[in-house]
Length: 377
Image (tube, rainbow, N blue to C red):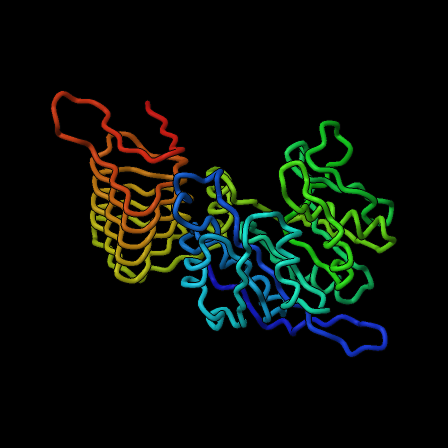
């Protein structure tokens, strides 16, 4: 997959008598990632890869593609990992500022934490574990050429009971927000990308913790509406994934891999078969194996007598021998060998070993971390 293009000029917003100002970016990259444990027990959920690239990177690329280059990343306990992965932002064409959040006290608290960085500039807040297929450029331009104090992205869903939803008027302006409604009052789920003007800073200091002890961004947006400010909506028609769970990660992986082209930079022997859109990174070796795309094989990985099926991403420096796998993600430095059944719909972490044991008596022998889930045939 080619990187997101960045030729779009920086967007600016009319501001009455004052000079126009560029839109800033605010990426929230804290949170515990409890729904992805044990994978995120010691790592940032935003760094779990989709098609061999951390999901956080897609957010940064899409902000830059929308002309937003001054970006702050709000981090939590895994801040050092995030900073090590992202660096100063130059690789993305951005300038990155890191802001430590004292505790995961809610999205609105993230805005308050970044108050000094944001100043009086309008900004786009992007949740670092959200993935949008087509990016945010058109939505950013709409906000910056309008006069709304806020703009939220929405997606039509079949079952809104698991989401925060928005109730709109006939012009698409937001009337109210409801978190996980028990009754079907709206099919418009709130996507994890928000646009705000400086008016939001009038509301956040007035918020009270919710029942789960957080300062909710939905309450802040409702506060804007109740104070008489206009909050617009922007309905997306493309695919959106909140990558908070294993199946969500696999879905995002599927979406990205469906867009890749064929590129073979590694070594493939004459007995191997490569079918469809497959990326084989430099240093990867494919021996007597079959790969059916779309799929990606990371740098330094070795496949020997293996089958890799569609919608599979194999990370760097892995070793797959005498095994079959499809519709899965395998993180770096893992090894799979001698498995007699095909692995599917799986998310396998770093430095994991999956192998058939020769020990007698035959038995399933496991060493699993907290919150692991194993499905056996």
